[in-house]
Image 1 (cartoon, one colour):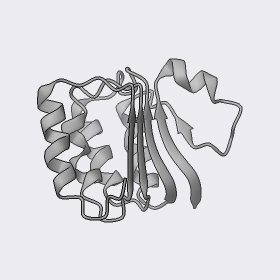
Image 2 (cartoon, helix red, strand yellow; image 1 turned 135 degrees about the horizontal axis):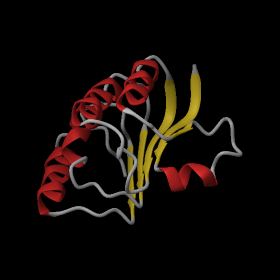
Image 3 (cartoon, helix red, strand yellow; image 1 turned 90 degrees about the vertical axis):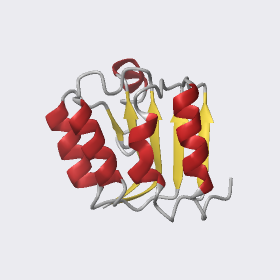
Image 4 (cartoon, helix red, strand yellow; image 1 turned 180 degrees about the vertical axis):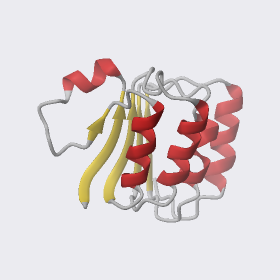
Length: 133
């Protein structure tokens, strides 16, 4: 299936976008839900992968978050958008998704991270040959 985007949102953000059925907005309520989302997402194509909100993975285990980003690394998408997200503890799990050669655009707005996360992203960007902006 083709989706315009796949957005993972926290519980507060998902309420603001429930009206748009085609938006691909999801709030993973458990590790099992995140696992199923990763399973189906790796078979889909979408233009944007987005992450919004500080507690998006609050109900998910570290293992399920890592597995989701492994699955995301197999998806077809070209833009990553991170909005108002706390990337502490998440940035290092983005690795498999960032290694995709098809990502041409990376956008971050209002994200929080510490020096280790910033260093990780900086190093990962150096290996992204397809990144245009």
